[in-house]
Image (cartoon, rainbow, N blue to C red):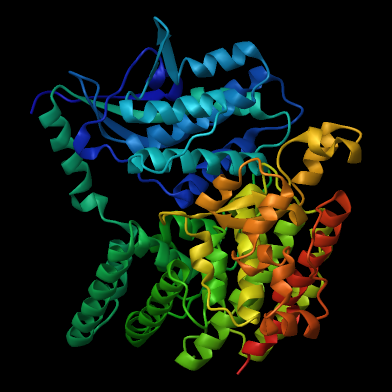
Length: 607
């Protein structure tokens, strides 16, 4: 292998005047929301340690630096061998920044790091042709349909949406130009350049295949096993560990690490870093970056004092919490009878759910008790999430971590009855209530939740009326004919002008919760600009929530009528759909929501 060149480079230096390629055999961009959350949290958290609203821009030069690791490149064609996940994600973050900066010079500075134009053609600095259409749609603020495109393109579109939502909550107003300056000049990589692609791959393998690059999970295993005195027990513990690690790895990238972090944070972390300048990392934060060191340093605190403690920690506690974590993942991915709320919460990307669920478990719990606790806590989380959504309150990881960690400590190892009492009180004392629905509507923030919330109402009405439907079908975007949000009012101000003083008021009303239903995509598109009277004919025969607008729904439908009467619900057919009708329909949706997210349901799962 020829000489290797390595040097520290800022983002500005890495992206200025260069085009990178990514070879076809490693082209997929696979980062999920979790990785983007961690990236944004880490970068904004580090930046906010130095930033003050009193600072002038030039003071950013004195801010501390942040190290992003290494990138491995080939010298001959600038191919990225290692580091494309981080570089692609940073490109998306730069895209967000340039679209939200006001100063044209600042915008131009960042745009030069993302793409260049020559003879009217846009070429991105990470130059992969299949991504161009998606990235241009982001730049131009136009709609893009990711379905049918390669995995990388679909993930890029989703991750950009995640960045938009996360940055709104992470960067204080007025600080974005400062963050831009810090990001492009104070965030650094080690750029490793090999003279040939073959040498680059040798470097990549060497960096990832030597003892020094053992994962935190492997180092934790080594420490725990070294403290078990008996050879037979040590071998048995090793076998258990290896089996569980293989199972976790089969469920997804980094799941073995995520499982251990979540278990230790849920059961043992006693502190967390506060979101303020110069705050000290707590147990929660240290476990997230080096849990193997944390366990070694905190061994006495978590009850590891003699060989038998270490043996029990691996062969009993580790196994119990790993098995429970795996079950949580299964319930999050597949709608399962008895554990529906776990699926509901995961469907809205509430990534802190496993932390809260595992916090409630005691290592001496039976499966029956664990099941009860999973149901109680997930039911609470479903109510908590929906109340926040209806009141336009963020659920993003960075904004919710502190509150959820403090809640995890409160419910740690409580009995089912104690859990239900604590969590019911938590709902009853929330600053916001379910009646936030009164002002709930479709907008740029709520669109990520609206399909779910409408699907919940739809599925509830049908289930209570004896119809056999599945919620997961309503929210599945991968099926051939997925469900879409349908505006009952078409987007024609001229048809409703008499009811409004301005078109803006019309649009606000049209986007109200009460003007929305869900329909299969083909039905939704076929209705297009139809008058309400024509739509009404087609609504009958669809799901009950939308069919209830048609008078035919109230004949020969005893189960639905019984459900309506027993709950005193204001369902009625609507031959005309007016501004007043939307308000009345909004009230009906509130009635349904109060039944679905009734705080008393939390206690129904106590055994």
